[in-house]
Amino acid sequence: KAGVTQTPRYLIKTRGQQVTLSCSPISGHRSVSWYQQTPGQGLQFLFEYFSETQRNKGNFPGRFSGRQFSNSRSEMNVSTLELGDSALYLCASSFRAGSTDTQYFGPGTRLTVL
Amino acid sequence: DAKTTQPNSMESNEEEPVHLPCNHSTISGTDYIHWYRQLPSQGPEYVIHGLTSNVNNRMASLAIAEDRKSSTLILHRATLRDAAVYYCIPFFRGNTPLVFGKGTRLSVIA
Image 1 (cartoon, each protein chain N blue to C red):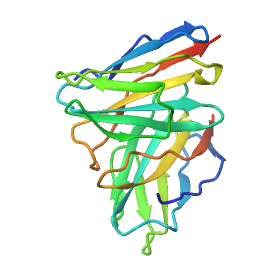
Image 2 (cartoon, helix red, strand yellow; image 1 turned 60 degrees about the horizontal axis):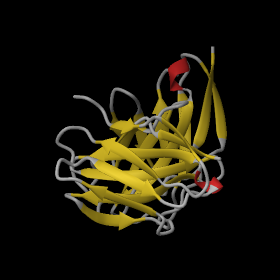
Image 3 (spheres, each protein chain N blue to C red; image 1 turned 45 degrees about the vertical axis):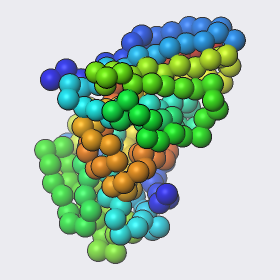
Image 4 (cartoon, each protein chain N blue to C red; image 1 turned 180 degrees about the vertical axis):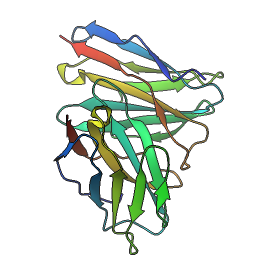
């Protein structure tokens, strides 16, 4: 089985712009979660989608949003980028939501905001 | 959320066993204990999880204290590829996401 894929792998944007990141989960997985990783804050949960519905949301401003499509692929969007949004954005998929199922992480998208 | 305490860093010689401790004194009775690790420049990967009994898989063993307030991840023979940040995560089988702490950075010396 192919693993979790994320595109693009690297991205450079300027302040005020918006960005869309994409995540393709492992085939058959219906839950997709997004995390932000920075040196200062570590890994922080953004949101989780299951069957096209947002199940959980972390403590991030409304500039961060996401969605999931019927094929379980997910996108996250960050509007009005700030310097502090520079981070590694990780996507993880699992078969079920809210269970002890293993979460499989993608390699991440490295976003740099100038 | 259950709070965890892990050493910031540990060091091991190659081919020796490594015991990575984790304190989770506020864990609830229904929280599973998950371990993930993150190799350099990669996303986290699952290592092992358990509830009450000790668990073994091809990657590691997990020893859980009888009172469940602590656990130890055991790598039986450390290799250079095991150098990573290891996260201990109490995880409720319900509505909560994985909550990552700072983890333990394991260095393996050849």
